[in-house]
Length: 240
Image 1 (cartoon, rainbow, N blue to C red):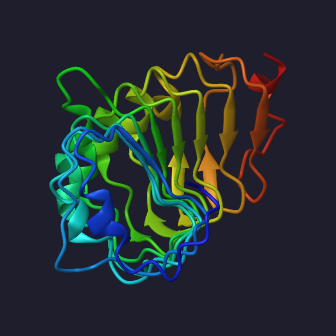
Image 2: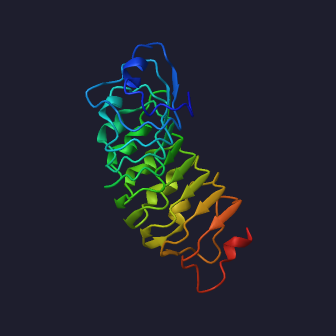
């Protein structure tokens, strides 16, 4: 039902709760503005939830708290303006989590690293791009060993980049661009990233510090590092 005008449908949660066998729910671009705070979703068979491109406000609703069987959650392009709830780390079946451009604040919770502990599923896609997150990148993001895409760009993250990022052996794309991150990026940050195809660290004052004869473990298709310090000599590793 994506792109169906539902801004006047105040009972949409109640009606959806009467579909207990529902496995996918797509309500993108429906002009939804709020959740019923007293209502919960009882959709125990739901695996895909797409509420992107709406006008949902406040905090990520507790109505979702018991939907721990979800594999795909797309809440991007809303107006939540709150922090990520810690209970999101209990969604051990998650494969895809998109919270892009949601006005979210606070720090990235340490519990996000718990999304690696699914028995059969593991997080492969994580986008927190375009929010107002501050503070450090949690070190335990390095435990998300099945991650293919990690996008933390366009936030207010500070501190250094944890070396545990270098353990994400399945990573194909990483973006840390447009933050206030600082310090050194060393060979350890790329230690096991042999499948990496794209890096975006632009508009962050990071310093790349590697050996002059370093040969990267990856073969990149694109690299964005404006505002980073790569010198004093032309980086020989680009020739690889």
